[in-house]
Length: 435
Image (spheres, one colour):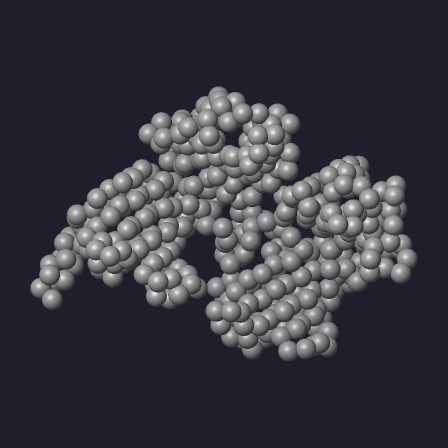
């Protein structure tokens, strides 16, 4: 008992003398201003480009050395300075770390086969220096840099967990308990996650036979509060749902050309199109289908948003014009030798701008659906949407089943599924479509 008391005194002392000499964890707005993905230089012949709030990814030909040198030169021009304290070997993989105004930007990449392009990711890790976080008094440090800390200590895992919680809380970090915490803890692995503004820190303590393994890392959180999205990523208020006439003035999908060898999809009795959507299959490759519709949507005045998925077998793309969101889906069936595709108009309501229940976290990218959790009960969540959507002019249709809600306004329909998830939290899926 005396040893444990002494241990806690040592750990508490280390926490008390800790003073983070880095800037306050960046806000969502500061993160947005730190890196502009829209103007970020791209390697020649880059393809499958995805730009999200905290990172950008794409594929490009060339060697790791060529990619590393390209970004060293291009980012230096933009004021970034390479962190040479982080070891990198461009022979076996791409890895460059740069800094600017306290923010850390990594350029990483790999290829699974020599003949394939490099899969490259540029990631903004934020402005928190985890090397400044306190360590146990007897820490056997293996790694300690601004992006990651890794050490061993003879202290028991439960004492290190307490120590980490104390110094993080004192510095203004709020713990976000992971749904898997209890499961991992039973295995001797304690995963602590903390947030402050737009930054998330993960501290992992693993119980070993005679010591504890400790890791600190930090990065930018992947979801946001509804207010953060509304104020920084998607400004303005929700658009008034359009009428069918208004939607047709933007685009009538029946007037778009189909691919030359179009045939009815498996679920269709005949090949048909509607003003708001079409679906069919072709023998052409998925790459050809994607290229065809990118050209069609560009010619129709649409802007492509960040794809949800784009691989050799599946593409989920989004296009926007005057607030109207079109979703293109294409999947390659290698066994049948066909590509199944669809193009649907989901209307002009940006569901990120709809009222959100208490505690909701939102994906900053715009899709035609959204998944979130809330601290409200099932009944209170239904009551929240019934009240708030009605205020905005939505009319509730007859409930189709337990936890299923549907609201209509002009030509747009909102479908809500409200139920408990695996972790007994209230989960909501919202989807917008046209009728």
